[in-house]
Image (cartoon, rainbow, N blue to C red; front, side):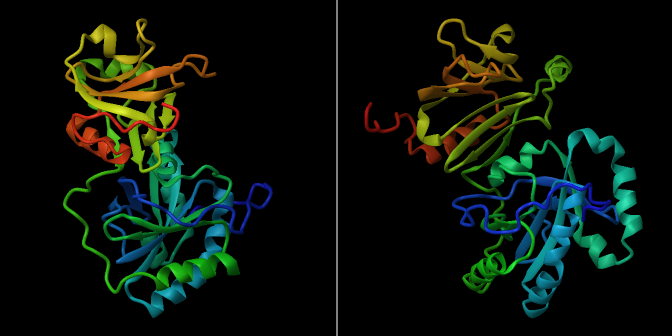
Length: 328
């Protein structure tokens, strides 16, 4: 739940403003707390076999979130497999004020059930928006998530007939029971970076730390966030995937531009990483996109797992190059 007075902003759109089908999307792994202070690991800690997650980004969106509560309470009463939570996504810069912000919310809410279903997350907002395909934070978003963390449906805006009908249809199509959560999710997901201890402090001075450095991979998106730097492309743009390293620190640590081929490195360790050769160069190092990079090296925490997931999304067999596309 997001509390506080409305700020006089125009009402965000309440209708079917965005696509509702999600293909191969997984809910990101996040550390949340309910308003009683209980830590909840997401998505494993979601309450239902199927859970509707309402994500809000601003206090003035509370009215939109509230508009869904009676409707969802009725559906949950009719089907004990269904749960729902409200998830305020709050920027990492507010984390030091978490006791005050969460305490203020808790003080305004007496109902224990509402406190338990309100899960606050303080994080790099991109950890939420990128894997879920959220491009507009001026409204709330709803996601139907199974126990394994797979997203089955999404919608946006306040409760109204068309969106409610679409969610009802999605619920009707669900199987009798959700599949159990796997021990380790293969394939697409969000991957952290491997931070060597000796480089943490200089990287932090650039705004690069474990919270702000991560790679999101979905069947249709690859987004590498490295503090203020972002490089994104489609998996279909990846020709080859190679495990590389070790490296010299002066060629790897930080955002690095190769003078020989203009390749881009997001580096946090000298141990090793994954190099992606691209079909079409992409921007990344400079804010206006003048420089294009034909390859991207990422020092992810688990190079083997990321490389396997990347090959799977790009349709590349191990040790091979992706099939040529039209025009190549």
